[in-house]
Image 1 (tube, rainbow, N blue to C red):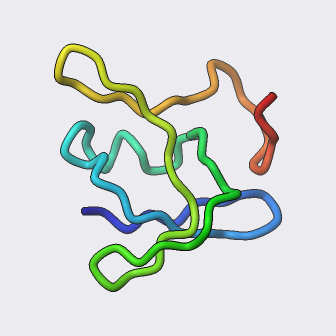
Image 2 (cartoon, rainbow, N blue to C red; image 1 turned 180 degrees about the vertical axis):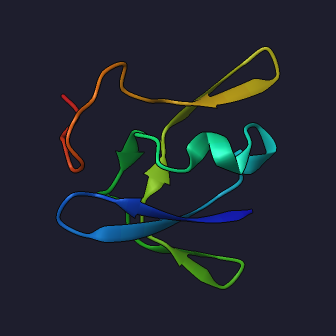
Image 3 (cartoon, helix red, strand yellow; image 1 turned 90 degrees about the vertical axis):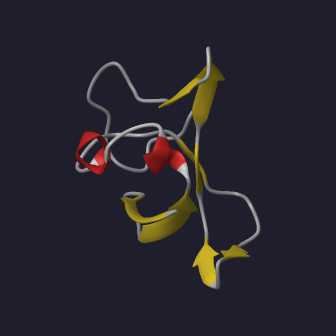
Length: 78
């Protein structure tokens, strides 16, 4: 598991994620990712996870969802 700090524009939140088994930490550092923020907090291994990274699974591999162009932190998905 990986503890990620995610800049939402108006605040920095955190996610506990198992995504590190599918991509390297350096692939995520400083990248834009899609997250869900309207979930209740959840403790994972005793650490509070406040947001969830959106990802997809295909052919036994996983990829996080990312914008194809630059968008400001905190942009809403429609």
